[in-house]
Length: 532
Image 1: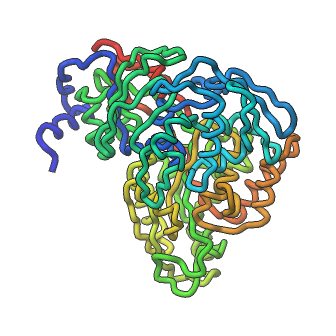
Image 2: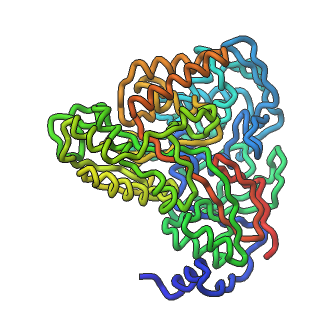
């Protein structure tokens, strides 16, 4: 039951009452923000999840980073040069120090890349793609690549740099094994070169940061302190923003946007996100887990996978559930730039219940079957509600879908162990090139992070070969053809069921200025909190 105060605040948020008076103004240079989930770990390689990456990205830095338009710009590296098809040399920024005062050198770069290449790292696929780092001198590093990498610099922009000395002193040279619930010093403590420093960490409660007084770079905003609070409930997050308890919400509920835009003291900052939301299906096991089908796996049959796809009324999800804040697509890639905005690649299979029932009957499941759909409930926009909607739509095929909705930490750990029959997932970030999802999701599972996120464990040698070839093809025209063939193969085999690219509106108090990026990354050094 909601408290009277919360009910009042919610009424204000929905424009039914005059807004509740804001509390006494906080210090103008403190940013208090919230979203549904919490960063999963402070070990920058242990989880590859956007909120976790965003928070770690204020503490740790990259050799190459992104500007507000997502262009690549220097960060801890000042310049770079390609020496040959499989060789790069980078000059490092002089005079940079870690938060504990240790100097930043080439030793830290070599250590960080090698640490990120460990099997427990969730960014091993990127770290391995940049090859073997070698120290030339204190401020010069060379990379020897195992093969041509068309997106080498973009991969560098995903690899955080840690202090070798700090990690060795605290026995944190190994990447935390998140899936096995391993405890690690680096999971709760941090020491980077970035503009903000960790003050305190209370998982699932509150994390506090302060500005790095000796930061080497420019900080355009005025924020001196950042307080992050996870607030799972949409209604409670909205109420906290309307009341002034928080200054910024990363993920306001789509159904509240119209009313929030009319709420005095609040504003909406909107835009599409580079993120594809999709369904993955177990195609590896001979018997499907968490199902009433015994002795076989329905998802091994492409007709079943296609039937599920064609039973999805994606326009209904867009209009009724997402309030128009989504872009349905048939291309499994975070940005339409990754599919070259090709209408043929972007096209979805048509919503057709009769065709879906026919396919299911041909596959031997005319009466349907049961399975469990794993779904996070605090990661993507309307994630649990999307799963419940899919379950109701698939029920028209006679399929009973049990939705197992849990916080993202539990779901992600479950998926890492392949303990699933089907799951809802999302993939996005700053890289618009399809390589960002190809090697991680389209490849057969293998060593060095290849196919790490192929949690359905399908094996498609033709698709695997196409992606492997596109990952090392230096000729742009030839590479584009390989990429298009890979998209067509995925669409034909339906290893994944694409849903939509979500939009990512942000909500803030009117005195807060932020830079909205399509990778859903809130950069604190660009934030200004004005007087109320």
